[in-house]
Image (tube, rainbow, N blue to C red; front, side, top):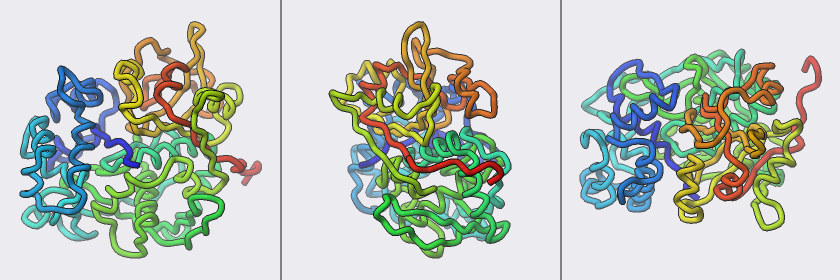
Length: 408
């Protein structure tokens, strides 16, 4: 399957250009401003369509479907799907900057580590740059945010691991840094319990950045945290069978057609992956209930939405959910007698959900160092039981993954 593209990340790349120091949006108001700058549109038009025009995320899918193999930029610009996308950009000159993240384009890539960025040779994508050692002191479930590859399943699993098993996940990251300050040695697992574990391999602390030294792919809400970007790079190396050299823009893009959240979580940390599809007997909401204790998830839990045409258009808009997208499941809430599932969107931001509770989610304090979690902040949202059952096809998780013993 192909997971949903992230229009927030693509908009960020479009408007950043070679500008330096542009931070990722930290509120939904900033996302809306970004959408107007990049697409001349509001979030409703970007995610769901408006006035008879298709949603921008649908246009991204159409471009990907129209380009099964690499082609020149000039030939791609003649395709109707590409022309429709170009017409939606505030500046048509941004199209080449975005296209390689959506479809294979001949001649576009990253300059190698240590090479000076040369506009004449690589005017569009960016270059590999050293981002510093992986730091594990303040690993948080709020850190991981998705970038320009559609690996929401991976980012959701990172969030869920840091939420339910923070000490164990921090230990995994700490162990990976023992090889040296600027190199990780990752020890991943097979995607299911019957698969052999891959041998450990080294990951240099270089990731692709754009010409203005801005993040292109996974990053942290805390700009100083490098672990989401480095673990994503390691995951790309594993899934694309790269033992040396740097992953290309095609390697990053191709993992958007890869695994499901429970498989990604298993690769990262081990355990037993589980997946439950909703049916007549047990709905997706019921599976979340089974995975919670005192309204918070006991073990890493993720959930994936249905395809767009499987759910009424009004339900998508009212829920603010994205089709073909994975979310981390944090727990449960009740507001005025209505039951809700508390999620975190890997995009790092989410529009306000009509009729959903806002403010403090007190139950989340149990897994948030005693502090209440803020709904509608950091991509956290509450989705009603009705919309959860309608829009989600199932719930994934990871079991048999005990916490470290005291002092471990």
